[in-house]
Amino acid sequence: MTQTRGLPVQFRDVMKGFGAGLDFSVDSSFRFLTVALSGTAALGHLTRSDAEGKQRSIRLFNVSATLGHFGAQGGSPDGWTIGGAVNLSGQLQVGADYSRSEGTGRVHLIPISVMPVALDCIGTKTNVHVWVGFGWDFEHVSGQVGGWKRPWTSFSGGIGLDLRNGLGFGLATGGPNTGVPFDPYRQWTLNLGLRYSRHNIVTEAFPQDRGCHVTPIL
Image 1 (tube, rainbow, N blue to C red):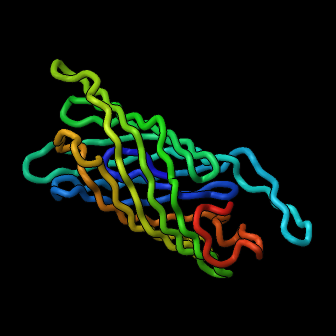
Image 2: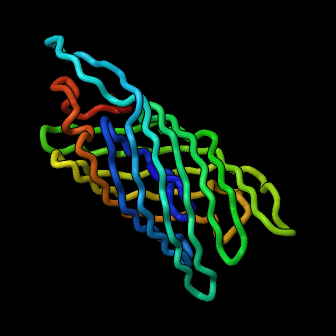
């Protein structure tokens, strides 16, 4: 999961233990380049059984934190951002982030984002994950002309590849939906991510989970 300015909201599962990620993102105007590090912990547990009655515990929800820096082109100021998110069962997520640039702070809240559609093709060595998500966004800007901005809805989507050795790669995009007032700090972004989790969907899937499934199955 990631939740900071300059990165699209993403749904990345850690089944047990911890995971880490490195992301590179550029906005649609090619004005801001964001680099971010994230960490995710799997908390709580659900118990599943396979066809032979063997049981395995997997996460109930993931908690993540992300720290990023955005470098600007064309005279725009650089800045930093920090955020966090909580994801329930891989499908429902809440998050918030704070960014600061040239003395102006922005608090960005996403009280709910949902991944209604996903496709997982799980093999013994790899998993291909395709997903789309929708969110509801709020923002507060500091300063004399700041205050709470009109809320907006957003879209995100992507494709990822998970390997049995714990490595994962992803390409994602996201941004505000049509009709949202223009803001140079709030544009469509394209993201390339690298992640690692010792317990990913490939290692934790039961035999009956193998194959392609629409909607998450863990």
